[in-house]
Length: 109
Length: 116
Image (cartoon, rainbow over all chains, first blue to last red; front, side):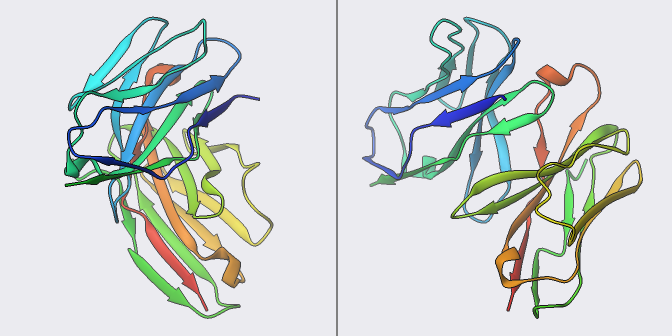
């Protein structure tokens, strides 16, 4: 069945460091791909999405490119801030929405 | 729109008691998902509905769990009898109609359930 595998955390970085969180997927057909973010005590909220191969989703300085050849959708940000500390989930949508296990990100001032 | 609304936000109950979690969908959305989040297992899809009809309940842990959509805008998740291992944060999410593949889910703030 369809599945999402993402990099295990926790990930701890200093402010202004570069971030990459890896995500790969397995799916039949052509799913849409998403990154969600969960701040402490809150539900998940959509960060960005891409609906077809080579699409790039971007929001709040984060970006991810839908790579069909490598079945990947890695999340990147050039310079992280303390406020980016959260749990990040990669997800795919085909007949239902399937989430990865989440990656906890902590940013040190 | 106020978004997906879940109640209660926190619930503490004794083992063996019945627990009912509630969810109000965003107006106009016709897909509804119930998820459970724990440290050990992450985010698990329990069940999802499309147009009030359960489509996939393969994630429901056992017969103690049941979910309903009595109308297009409201859902309940019931656990009876509750057990300590049911302690988790339960999320409800809704999604609009149309092309399922392209539409994201909108999450409520969750219900933190503690069974003692």
